[in-house]
Amino acid sequence: MGRGVRARARGAPAETSPARRGISGGTPVTAQMQAAVLYGGHDLRLEQRPVPQPGPGEVLLRVAACAVCGSDLHAYHGSHPRIRFPRILGHEFAGTVAAVGSGVSSVAPGARVCAEVDLPCGACSQCHAGRTHLCLRLRTLGFDADGAYAEYVAVPAGNLHPLPPTLSFAAAALVQPLAVAYHGVKHQAGVATGQKVAVLGTGPIGLGAAAVARALGAWVVISSTRDARLEVAQRLGVDETVNVRREDLVARVLELTHGEGVDTVIEAVGGLQDETLQQATQIVRRAGLIVVLGTFPSKRATLRIAEFKDRELAMRGSRGDHQAFGPVIDLLASGAVDPSLFITTTLPLDQAGPGLQMLDEKRAGLVKVILQPVVTG
Image (cartoon, rainbow, N blue to C red; front, side):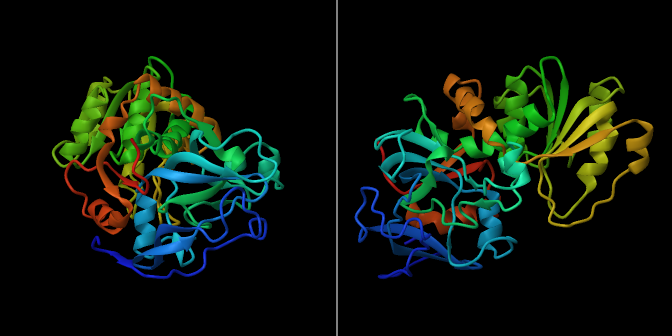
C-alpha cells in the first residue's frame, strides 16, 4: 500500500443524492468499488465504497484515468476553502460509460468520454445567460461532490464529451485543465495569429496556456524558476524562455519586444505573492491585456494602478468554460498539443497518496501524475 493511503475493510456509506437512491441505472445497488477517500488533512484512505447509482439524466462512468491537480493538493493539506470531509477527490478524468440513468439517450454504455466537472444549478441569472461556469450556486465534482479517485463516478450526461479512438484515456484526463488554459487564452484574451504573448508560470495551466497560444499562431515567451519545466515549454514550441532566478523578466521581455511589450500577459503563478502582477503591468504594451489564470488565496494584491490608467491597461479573470472542451480535444487528437509532454508519471489508484506527495515535493521534471483506477489496454 502506498505511503499516505490507508486501507480499510469497510468504508463509510457513499454520499448519495435523493435522485440516485433506488435507481440502479443498470448497476447493482450492492456493488462495491475501490476509492481513495480524503478524511482530512493528510488523511487519505483506500476504501470499499458502494458504486454510485446514476439518477435521471446521469451516467455511471468507469474511470480509466484521473489526473492529480494542484487543487487536489490544497485539499490534501486541508486548505481548500470549499471541501467537506470525507470526500473522494478527482476532477480531471476520462473513462467508459458503464450504465445510464433514466431519460439518457445521448450516450450509451461502452462510450469513451471525458467529463466536465461543474454542477451548475441551471436556474440562476448566470446559468440563464449561458455562463454556467459562473453559476451562483456552482458545485464541482471532487470538491462539493465525490469525484474520480475511484473506480466509478456518477456524472450528468450533459457533462460528457466523446473521445476520438486515437486519444488515450490518460491524454483525455488532460482535457479539463487544458480547457481552463484554452478559455483564458482564446475566450478571455482573444489570442490570435501574430500576437505576442507572455505566460508567467510553468505549472500545468501555464504550460497549457503556452501550448494553446502557440497552436493559435502567437509568438510566446514563458517564465519560470524551474529549468526542467522550461525545457518542457521549449518542446511545446514556445519561442523564448526566461528563468527568473537568473534573468530579469521585465528587462528581457522588453528587450525581446524592442521596448514595446507584449499584447497579452497570462498570469498562471498565483499563490501568496503578487510580484507577477507587478511584472505583468510592466511587460504588457499600452492598451494591452492581462488575464489572471493563477489562484491567489489572499483577497488582496498590490497593483500598479497608475499604469492601468495612464497606459489604458485591462485585466480579466478566467476560470474553466465548458465551451473549451471540444477545441481542446481537437488540439490533442490532432497533435497540435502533445499530451505526452504533460504526462510524466502514471500510478495505480492505491498510490494516490504518493502521487500527491510527488506533486507537493515539486520533483524535477514532474508535470502531471495520472492515476489509473482501471487498467486499460
